[in-house]
Amino acid sequence: MTDAAALTERTRAAVQLLLQRIAEGDPARIAELFAEQVDWAIADNPAVPWIRPRTTRADVADHFRELAEGQYPDPNGSSIDVLVADGAEAALSGRLAGTVRHTGKSFSSPFAMRLTVEDGLITRYRVYEDSLAVAAACTP
Image 1 (cartoon, one colour):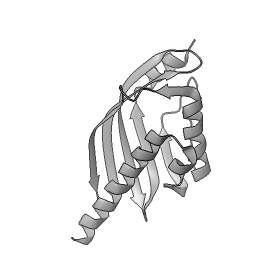
Image 2 (cartoon, rainbow, N blue to C red; image 1 turned 90 degrees about the vertical axis):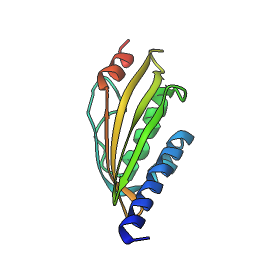
Image 3 (cartoon, one colour; image 1 turned 120 degrees about the vertical axis):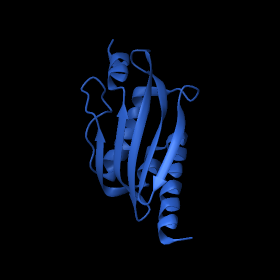
Image 4 (cartoon, one colour; image 1 turned 60 degrees about the vertical axis):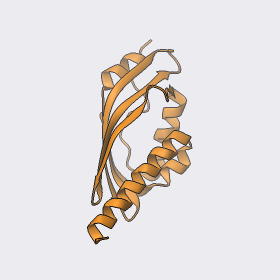
């Protein structure tokens, strides 16, 4: 296997482990997969308390903790359609779904994610989703 192919496979494995840990729901174990400093971007939305800027591994744990406190995921409505890795870069797309705890409203959205993995840790994390659908579910 070439060095480039090996790097691609390590990146794919890191992203698959991230998805597994997100499904397990332990914020501290999810955060272990991220570098101490993270280039994080999810479109900031004041109506959605867990969607805001993050920069550190501790912030990542806080994000997944706040996400779990704020909504119930819908595993039957969430899916990954494609995962592509090339060197240190990975992109995936699918559908996410859940119910906001304090309103009882459900949401569903297509999403795309782009990640960079360096030395086995995620250093860049980008999520693109229908933030209006999530915000609407957060509004009483």
